[in-house]
Length: 319
Image (cartoon, rainbow, N blue to C red; front, side, top):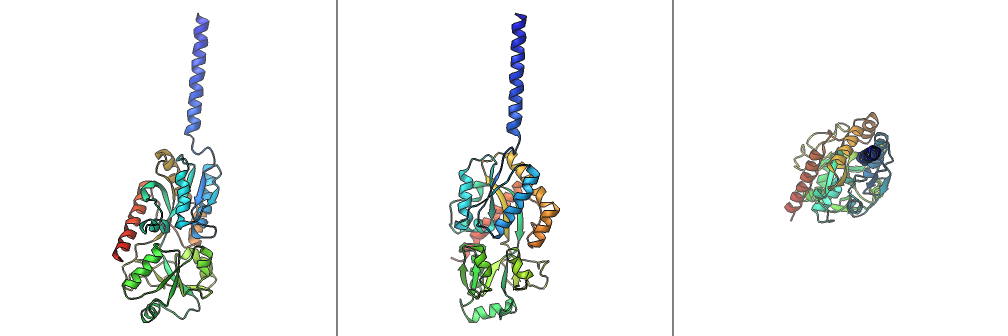
């Protein structure tokens, strides 16, 4: 009888130990690759950011973080794939300002509350750039031409319903009508002013950084309250009397809102740790696009939700 009790006790102890080990293995996150869906095609700013973040997360998590480009519908196609995947923390995606703007414009069916934002990775004011040989030397000259020649100036943008489109509508409402020329492919958009297909491009400086450094483009205005430290001679929209400095071009890393708080916090900590590395700081300096500070998931969620509200309010004001 004693032998039987001993055997049962040993068996029970082994079962408890195995259960504990199994639970610990399940609690370890991540213990397998995390797919990072970049919601735009190769070569654009979201892709560049996503691939750099992937490299840094792999170093931190010690698991592969493969990048999948799923472009289309202003980033909504990739986000649909993210939401269709299990909400287990092993599928993340890029969520950027352009896509949030598209929701406010009625493109796609997603909303900010469908996602949990791990962190804001980049945050930059947008600018208007022209080819270096453009006849428009200043933004005041550019606006004077627009006023005298309604809709003749063509501005390359990332699409309708975006902050690009909103800014053009805003300028038109102030007496400076211009034509929005959307491009689906980033590379074609960036090159359009150089090929004279458009007169200017609305973009954040990082995406056209190669053209700025090779002296093929120059900025006319920055849509912000303060001058950009990399372009101290470029006037701000506020200086020129325009109240449209609250639509920054931000990028973030997001997961499904159904993801557990523990995994969200782990991902947020890893992303924010990556933002503090010398490698990332060099990357964001080279692309003129650093986040102003680190954001917790709660702060990042509020940031994205408030951005969507701002865009909605602008669009309503144009109707």
